[in-house]
Length: 223
Image 1 (cartoon, rainbow, N blue to C red):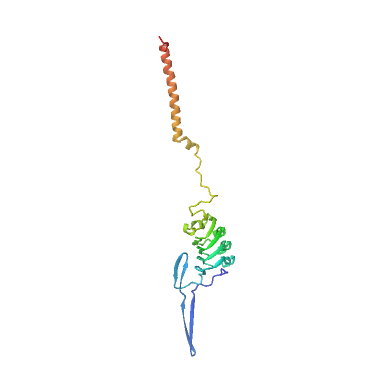
Image 2: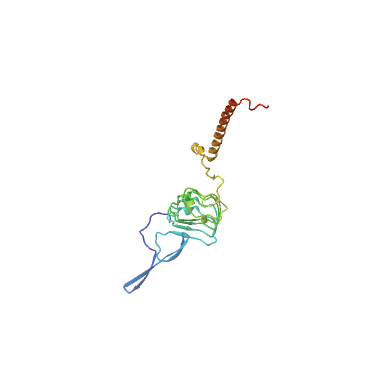
């Protein structure tokens, strides 16, 4: 598991031999297994030798996850779910370049999700639900593309895809309207109309008053 050199493709088999006098014959069979991987139970009638997995789920293992696991570079799937593991998620897991499935759910892990996990470009299944994790889910990578169920049960976690935004996450403020938008504002258009109306009314009133005064300058005097 510590080397990335891939042997010639083949299947895991078992060979039985039986000798009869000088002649002999043998027969073999392929190993079969139903494996929980990528969140699903998959039946393999023939197990490929390139599938390198560790499944230690549903036990009572406790303590921390060893950093040494990050040296298993050929690891294809790692399932440590449903145990009593505690401590931080090792940042060395980011070295598992071929990892496609990582399940650490239902443990007692704490701390933040290491940003190094964003380097797992082949990761297709990720589950850290129901732990004691906190902090921000690393953004702008495949980790924020997984479903909400991958992170639920961690009251201290925040960020996409969870509904709770982190304290340092600010919602985008709407852009300030441009001068053109200001000029087309219905409110501002209404005030302009009112101002023009008052101005025109005042000028018309002055004109009418002047005409009346010229025709009858004493109309306003009391008899």
